[in-house]
Image (tube, rainbow, N blue to C red; front, side, top):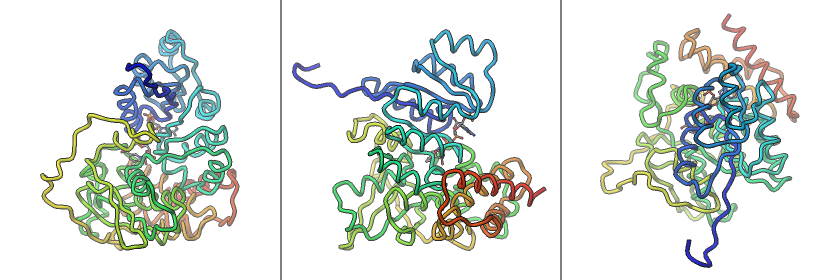
Length: 391
Ligand SMILES: NC(=O)c1ccc[n+]([C@@H]2O[C@H](COP(=O)([O-])OP(=O)(O)OC[C@H]3O[C@@H](n4cnc5c(N)ncnc54)[C@H](OP(=O)(O)O)[C@@H]3O)[C@@H](O)[C@H]2O)c1
C-alpha cells in the first residue's frame, strides 16, 4: 500500500440464496475482490453440499438452510468451520436480524424473499436486491421502511441497474420515461397458436442469459418484464404508465431513460450479471473488474421492436395489477409463482399461466391498503386458488 493512502473498509455481506444463479455470481465477485468484500452469512434452500463448499471457501459465521435438514455429517462439517446453523422457516429472518453484516444481498427466488428484505431494512441495513418479488409484493412498505431507516436499496436486476446508472447526476423531475429493454425470451418469434405445445425444456432455454428456472419461465411468458415494471415503479418512484417496455433481442442495452429535453441515456454491456452485482456491492464506488469487455465495433446490429401484447398477456396483467395497487400485485405474484411451478411440474400448459393469473386477479378479495400480513395472506390465497383451479 502507498504511504498515506486510505484503504476502503471491507463490506461484510449476508447473501440469501447463495446457491442460486445470482448468489453464485455474487460469490464470484467476492472472490475477485477479497480486499473489498467478506461473507458474514450464507443461505441455501436445499443445496447443502454446495453451501458446505462455499462455507469452506468464504468462512461465514452463520448459515441458514430453509428447505431441508442437514444430516449429522453435514452439521458436523459446518460446526468444524465454527458456523452457527439456522434451519426452518424463520432461518432467513434470523440471518437478516442477527448476522453481522453491512449489506444484505437478497438473491432468493420468489415471495420468500419479501420478509427478510423488510427485516434487514428495519434493522437499518442496506440491501442489494435481486429478489424482484420483494417490491412486487410490498413495494409501499419496503420503500417506506427504507426511507424511515435511511437504508439504501441497490438494484441488482440488470435493467434496474441500467436505469440507476442512467440517473446518476440527474434530477428526478427531468425524467420523462423509463424504457425497460426485454430480450423477448425464447418465443419472440413463435406463433401464438403454438404456445399450448411449448415444453418445459424449450421454455427454460433463454437465448441470452443463464438463470434460475423460475425467472427463465418468467422471461418466456414475459411476466419477468411485468414484475420489473412494478419493481421500477417503486425503486424509481414513477407511475407505471411512464414505464415503457421495448424488445431488444441482443440484450446489449440493458435499459434507458428518456429525459424532458428529448435526450435518451442508455446503459450497455455484455449480458453478464456480475457487472450489476458488483456495482450494487461496491456502491457508491465503481470498482474495477476484469470481466470480458463489450467490443462495440464488433456489434452487427442493435434492434428494437414493440412487444406483442396479445401473445404475451402477462405484460398487461402486470400493468393492470400495478394500476389497481393494494394487494393486486401480491396476488399477481403469488398466482404467477404457483402457475410457473405447475408448468415446471408438467401439470399445465404454457399458455395456461396467464389465464390462471387473470383468474386470481379477478377472484381474490381486493384490499386497498394492505398491511404486511394482508399481503402474505393474499399471496397464499392466490397460490391456493391457482392450485385448486387446476386440481
Ligand atoms: N438469474 C439471473 O440472472 C437474475 C437476473 C435478475 C434478477 N434475478 C432475480 O434474482 C432472484 C434469484 O434468481 P436466480 O436466477 O438466482 O434463482 P435460482 O438460481 O433459482 O436461485 C434461487 C436461490 O434461492 C434459494 N431458494 C429457492 N426457494 C427458496 C425458498 N422458498 N426459501 C428460501 N430460499 C429459496 C435457492 O436455494 P437452492 O439452491 O437450494 O434451490 C437458491 O439459493 C429472483 O428473484 C430473480 O427474479 C435473477
